[in-house]
Image (tube, rainbow, N blue to C red; front, side, top):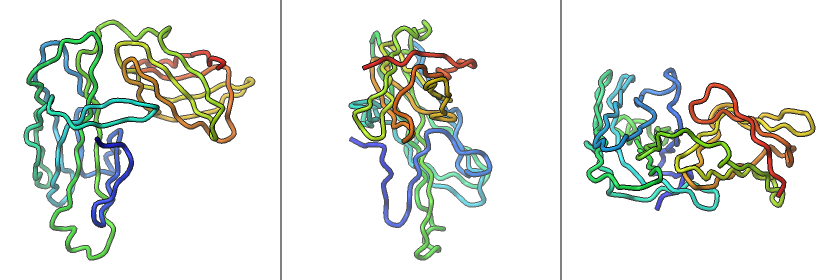
Length: 241
């Protein structure tokens, strides 16, 4: 099992990316950033590009993605195959990665995985002496059997846990598909407090997640959030618990 903490390999620091870096910041670029398998679909193509001036070595793996006690968990799996699992991409070139689903499970609920693409140390790193090398990690969502029906907002519940410091924003999702929360703000006593600009995170199907709130915020009446691919923010009441 693999968690989402940063880890160290020799002198290199791997940076976990839940979204791709901006084009000016990354030489390793990946498209698409969301991978959704429709019913009976067996394979998807992901393209990894090298926008830099030296070759990039990369390792590609897929993990089962689960959530437990407010934490993301990555578990090794053989349910999805990647080809090739290792690649060497010359400068200015692109590599197609095939994501293969040999046996699609029959289930009433969406299945979730993560495609992990790690940039590996290359020959250039050996010339850097004792310098710290920042290598990239992309972590991209894979969803299988996503229901065609839209998310039911009545099955999303939000509350604040004040028993910890800082207080925790907790979100329960009783839908059979994931929800993605972005641009989150909480209204407390008529004042809007921004919790997250951009992506806050995901709550998988029939799961619950939590996030620490700013130190000065421990209560609120409403939460405003951009949900999944909606362009307009959605408003939810914060339950008293």
